[in-house]
Length: 215
Image 1 (cartoon, rainbow, N blue to C red):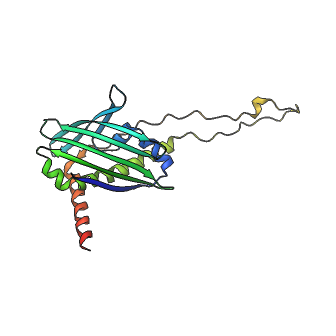
Image 2 (cartoon, rainbow, N blue to C red):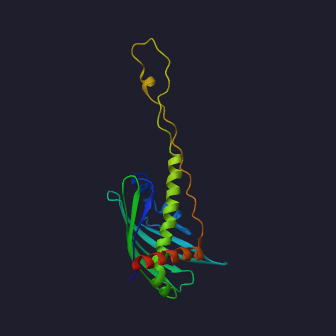
Image 3 (cartoon, rainbow, N blue to C red):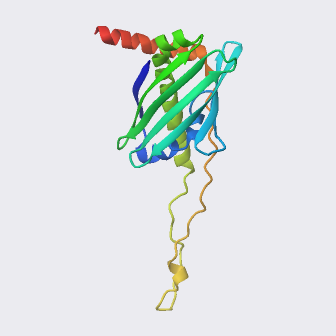
């Protein structure tokens, strides 16, 4: 059973990143070609991912169950999927954990199985494809963090009060005004996944690991 163990860095503190990672729909918006929506029971999520192979577009559909431990900033994921023609099936499970102070170290560990026509490719190059996807995810997540920080309301400032001859100021004069909370912009969906671009990134990842073992 192939395994994945990767750590990516998001240049923002966990306090800013984890609230976004706790929203599966926002996470999906950072994955190229992915969509996600809650199922009727509110615990599992159903989604899909579109992969473009030149003029052809393939769609893989599946569902996932997510369990969050917010105190430890960990998320356990169990998922399964099937391609639109029903020829290939996949099962996966893993743990995502966030740590760090000024930057977020996102550790991803898991394992997966693929059956059908994609089995050989998944067993041989799935880890490198996952590494390339995580790199793209980290870049999109950082952009999302920056957008949310820019949309945050400014801090409250005291309202100027005219001098009064009353020795006891009224309570209203001591209440600061608070700017209305800005509505966070809706997440922008990551660009559609291009298989050739992803495979090129995966090839570079494989070459890097190959030469790294020889050095």
